[in-house]
Length: 272
Image (cartoon, rainbow, N blue to C red; front, side, top):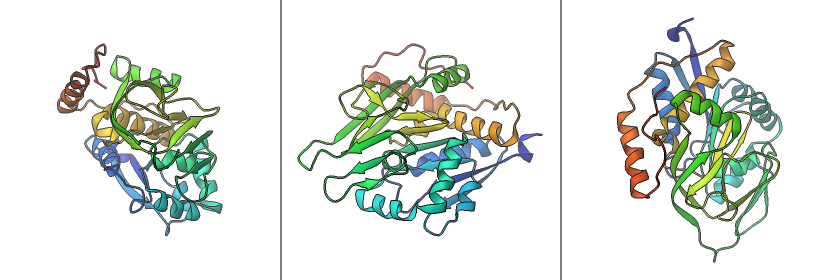
């Protein structure tokens, strides 16, 4: 089966409510990089009008950040059959990238600075708590070394070197991980809570992170991993993606590492 006969459906979680700080760029990056390789792509908004069957139909899930009020609206809607469909998708290995508010949505609960605790879906064993309005937000550039074992191995096999991600964080909540693997180790920035050196979480094939930017244009090999993983799961066959010219993205990463005075080995090599 060639690429023209294969398709990917991207499920975009609540695009009108959870797209803070340009996180829609993650959807665009997956869409374009798949299309450039000849795959057919559909972007399916998953919102208040969506059904559980529509959630079940997607091959990749993308969730962005949200303010506390919008997050409450989402949590009230994502209940019952829709919540079960989301749990089943992630538990069965559907790949996805979830930024800022979305991991809090997938976690056990989020306690905002004001108002009541917002219960999560309990898919990721983590909790997020806002320490209060007088606490400084975690804002600034972010560099992490991917340490989630399987993901790190698969990314290294794709790019030929240890995977490092560059992004931008802006969050008031602090996240503590339970029995879930961290996505990575903070090299520059604050990460989950500014205390334990962890950033994000990784479970099955779900990437949770505080990294905006958005994440995938700055780290296009992660988008390729999502595409490859989705196609392998959907078509139950080995998938080898064709190489794209990522010169500009690589130069941008190098410039950011240099600006932040972060010295990493072989950062230029991001060839698929």
